[in-house]
Length: 372
Image 1 (cartoon, rainbow, N blue to C red):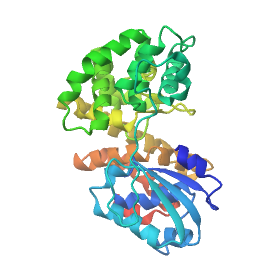
Image 2 (cartoon, rainbow, N blue to C red; image 1 turned 180 degrees about the horizontal axis):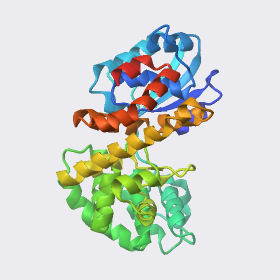
Image 3 (tube, helix red, strand yellow; image 1 turned 45 degrees about the vertical axis):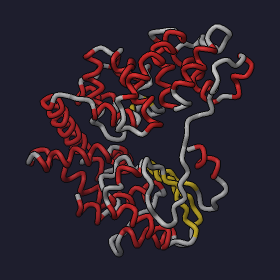
C-alpha cells in the first residue's frame, strides 16, 4: 500500500487498488478491476475486450492484493498475461504468497520491519527501528498513557526480536498488553514460541512465529469469544455489526474485545474486517461441523434478506447506494449464493434473484451474471 501511495503522480492515469479476496475464480478479476476504476461495461463486447480497449492507451498501476487464492485457476495468471500484452503502459503490482510464474514477473520478497537484532542496545537507539515504533503506536491505542522508557524498552526489543519484525505478530503482542505488562508479554512469547514453532513445519518459516503467536493469543480467550471468532471467520471481505450479530451471535462487547486484541479491525464506515491470515488460521482450527453448518445457514439467510431488502431501491432514486451496497458485500454474497445452490435452498435463491439480476444488468456484468 505504501508503494502504491508513493506511486501516485508517477503514473499519468492513476493508481488503483483491487482486493481479490471476494473473487471466487478468474472470471471475477476483470469486473473487480473495472469496479476499482469506475469502468462501465455494455452488452456489445466481452467484458475482457472492453477492459483492454479502455486501458490500451492508459498509463496506470493496478495493485492486485491477495492473488494467491486464485492460483489454483490457470485462467487467473493467463488473464494477467493478456492484460499486460494487450495494453501499452499498464503495470501490475501483485501481492501473493506464491510466485505467479509469468515471464513478465519480477519477484520481490517481503521481510519484517526493521527490528533490533541485538537486545542489549541503549534506549536512544530505539527510534531507528520501525518494528519498535509499530509496537509503541499499537500499545498506545490500547493504553493511551503507554510510552517507550527505560523500564520497558528492553522487553519491547525482545518482543520485536522474537517476531523478526513481522507486523502482525508485533501488533498482536502489543494488543496482549491489555492483560499483561511488557515483561510478562515478552516472557510468554519467548517461552512458548520455540515449542510451538517446532511443530509447525508445514508453515513458511517467516510465518511460523505469527501462527504460534496467534495460538497463544487464542489460548487467552474465553470459549464463548473463540466461538464468536470462528463464526466471524466465515465472512469474506468484511461485515457489519448487524451481520455479525445475526450470523455469529456476536454481541457489541465481543466485537469490542476482538478489536482491542487486534483480531478485528474497524474502518471509518463502521465495517469490521479480519486480516486474511488470521481468518485462514481460525478456519484451520477444529470447529465442530454442526456449528459451522449453522453459521453457513444463518449467513446465507442473512444475505438473502439483505438482497431482498434492496429490491425496490435498485429501481428508484436509491439505485446508486444499493449498487454500492451489493458491491461491498460481493464476497459474502458469492459465498451465500454457493451455499444456496449446494443445499438446494430455492427459497433463499428466490429472495435473492431479482436484486442480483438488476445488479448485473445495470452494471452490464453479463458474463459474470451468466456465471452466477
